[in-house]
Image: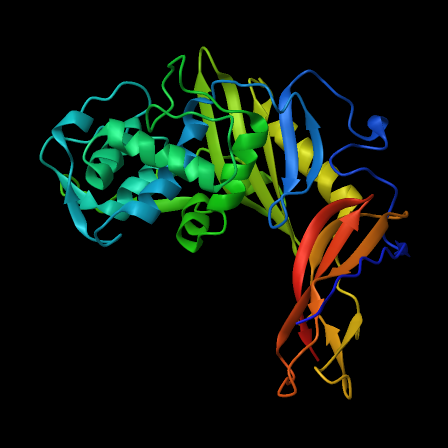
Amino acid sequence: MKILTKIIFISAVLCTMSGIVLGVLTDKTALAENGYHEIVIEQSTGRILYENGARKKMPMASTTKIATCITAIENYSGFIDERVCVPDCAVGTEGSSLYLKRGETLLFSDLLYGLMMRSGNDCAVSLAVLTAGSVENFARLMNQTAEKAGAYQTNFVNPHGLHDDNHYTTAYDLAKITAYAMNNEMFRKIVSTKRYVLHRSSDVCGQVILNKNKLLSSFDGANGVKTGYTKKAGRCLVSSATRDDMTVIAVTLDCPPMFDECARLMNYAFDNYEMCDLSPKGPVAFCCNENCCRTFALGTIESIRYPVRKNGNERFGYGICDVKTVSNKAKTGDENGKLNIYLDKRLIFSQKLFII
């Protein structure tokens, strides 16, 4: 079949968009740089709304547990709500702890909540061993999770984040891992929970735990995710919030005022960006059948939501390619071609076209 390849750039000026190069602030005074290693992104698209020092490899303390949690959820072979026995090797793990006891049982999901709400290092080791048989095997799974998230400057050697020179990430990578994890419903439920009752065999009354992430109570729309601290890593925080239909993720590493700084980053994002539908309305291209006696309109069938600057102009380009002639039996809903969307000539989306 003959292939008609046609690239069309259309300058689209939308009333809610402004002149910004992807990932770079146009107005530096809007969020003054302060030397912290930090970033804020929109969760569904990964668009960088602000970053500073976000590509430097750093220790990340217990924010490691974001990867631990999603890796355990995705790889555990049993049922999330089944009762499990605490592995002997997890008892007495140094650092923050739920003080799990040798031989006691609790739900696998309790370990996930204890991991993310109270930063239990003993929960981290328990999850690793129950999921993969050993901490070493589980660390390999964590690195696979990082790769799936597109985080290529990250290396995990343990599930809790206690210091190791070979255990590191970047603020940018950690944001990507978190964005990946936030696609999971169970993960979102855990990290947004403020109060939870554990089902420990050693406590028949049920142990109540509270989330250490105080932004869940103090920041409008906050819904996650994890605090962290070691002497080497300093104070670290990954936070997320949703307002209207936009979810943002902020990361700051080695930042003493971590709660205030993440709140500042997220407020900047909400004050300056909003989600808009970039999908063109109606037909965007046409194709014909094999004997050129009939023409079909092509268009998108799903909306394309993307964060754009408020109160200004951003230039978007639309490229149409890979449109083919179709058979005489072609019908509405058949796929044909692709729509590419560009911001300042950078590809940001590709979407299939269909006969409409």
